Length: 312
Image 1 (cartoon, one colour):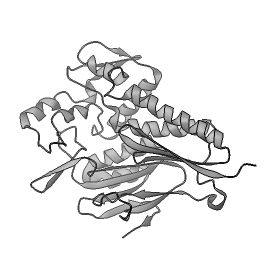
Image 2 (image 1 turned 120 degrees about the vertical axis):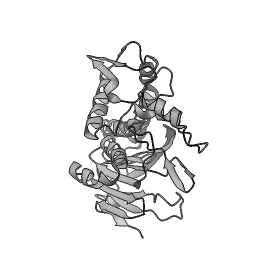
Image 3 (image 1 turned 90 degrees about the vertical axis):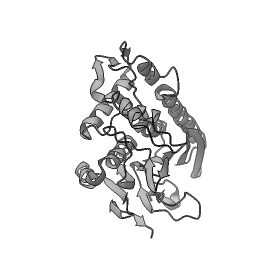
Image 4 (image 1 turned 135 degrees about the vertical axis):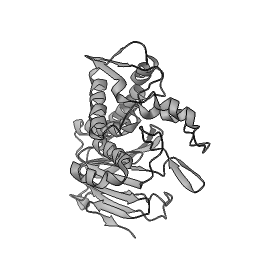
């Protein structure tokens, strides 16, 4: 019988460093499974990226204010999911809000002009997305859809499904910090142990010698984190991050970061974003969803509902 081994496959996708770690005995199967999973991630990126001219998202956006666009079943399913998140969040999770990037320049660190911000806000609103049968139409010129709020997390779950279809029982999929654990560790000396996930402190740089905020055991399911530290700038001592409220057009400020553990990564990612947008109402809302979480408030206070190994 072949000996057990752990193989790690690193690649880049969706502007993020990514990896697949597989525990198994059949190296050929593991390599074939990893290649298929990476190909699935690349397929999703090409199909749904707004940066790709021939993606379905770009075709929908180019037709805004004009004709309807035909959809396949996968895209319809993701739009159904977007609608459910919009309803669940009271309109805070809105995939038409990506147009705010037109007035928020995080590279230049410049606040938007009020008039320009108000103009962009008029093109935001899921209620203006018209769907009939297998077609969708953006009613207002200048409207856009942006799957960035759950696209990477969806790719994580799809990669995990591909691995499972290839017979892989023990794996950790990591796309830029969004994770899916496909069973516990499989190596004989680690059998039954969870994957230990290090959560970055939102106010400490990600470096080898920097202690993590916490180490979370993840045996099965998804984990995702949203925070104010990925893209931000500071003006007059105020931090402005990339998580933007679609109702006001302004960044959130109540949480430094929110991590959620859920049955899958797509759900975990969406819930972290909604929690960031809900501000002081996030904790009771997360508890109502029945998920585990780790949240760092604006003042550094740590709130959690999850078994974990916390670091001082």
